[in-house]
Length: 273
Image (cartoon, rainbow, N blue to C red):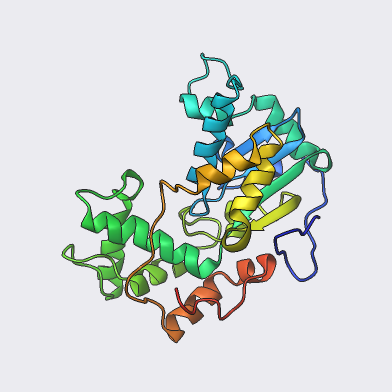
């Protein structure tokens, strides 16, 4: 595995098996819409919600369109124009995950403290203060309110945003791999026990350089990519009032211990968030 501008587990170990693609397809978080495959280039990028996935799609599609590239799938494929650019033919998924040694698999990861905080702020706090919650949250918010009521936790009432501490309690009540993709472990979301990644880029230090390097492989100029990423369109924004306490940080570390270890994030890196 190439460890440039990135971090992995202390041993640097990654899966090396080239077994059946079905092992990947059976994972709850697998989706062809979150995996950009180029069989012709031997390239695979698995997208990670709350880690620049919207920016990746936007820059990729704009860059390919500007370059005059045609969508990979025909017009009869029942997906949007954007997804036609980012979705490969079905046989390519079988080939890629059955012959992983032939592919350069890449992903972007984020400090777990920042990722779960961003998910809470973006989906629940901003959603509460907007005319309506994001579509993906509209059925979940009532579940969160009921959970708080059943557990005797703050957040049962609809007159305030759902509290971060109660949000952590809700996450703790569900097993890894079965949670919402925006706050499940990155190990689960990125299928990291089943995909042999060659490049793992930290969002905090290598998002732009990793994007530029990756998209250059599909013919998008690195300087153009860098310029596009200078104008983010889906940024969650920094939270004005600090949320973390020692106790909350300890809970998040316990929840995402596998991500801290595998991807090389420090235990005390919640300071200043």
